[in-house]
Length: 301
Image (cartoon, rainbow, N blue to C red; front, side, top):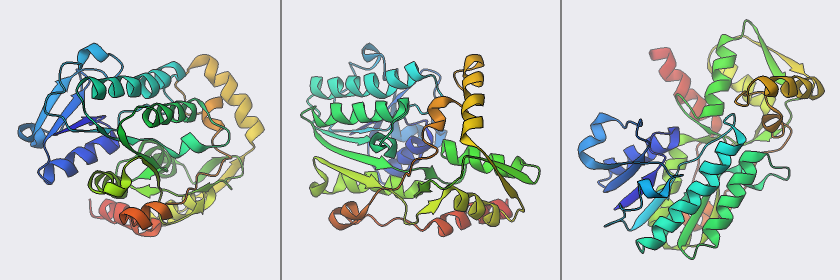
């Protein structure tokens, strides 16, 4: 049986669907207010609890042989909460595994863990990776880049929403030259399945990126074209953005425009998936095909 954390998140929900459709037995840790698709109810055991509160799930490890740890918080959540969920939540998950002699864990990290200049999210992911590596468990760590798909992930969905709502002009923070490698949601789910099924994935760290590298400017242009829109990009100098972010941070620590968020804007988020392809057969989708799938469905809706 698989212990799944983060099942109500964008990735976790897709992972849960995939596991259930393939007949896997799954036990999910859900926040008390969390809900899963009713279609899964008969095939999934639900444990109300919180990954940051060990006592809420400590007693529920019977029959579990594998953990898929997707639970995480991203910016713009408060920095202390990101650290608590991503670091302490991972530590609690490892403790749970040890207490119940669960030897196998697939841990979903992020490209932010290997940025040269890390914000609080990247630091939390790097610390969580270290905990997993030092845990003594049989681990596979997966580092997705920006996840995209219909309705998500978080940052992709916000970008699409901004582009659709923009009255002809799209503000781009900074020069927009940072290189990205967005990864299709189903490819990340497949990556988890490959990690579960491949003995060679044991005690390995794999990059889970898309097949296409683009600059942020190019990504915006591709989304605009795929959605059949006409938009003009207007670049806002990073110095102005930084000054605005400091002021906004005094009013709200959960703003998408924050000093922590800006730190990642000028960094390349490209990572090589070739080792994962060679060792486990990972083959990601091209960005143009993924965007076509999203916006073709929108056109038919």
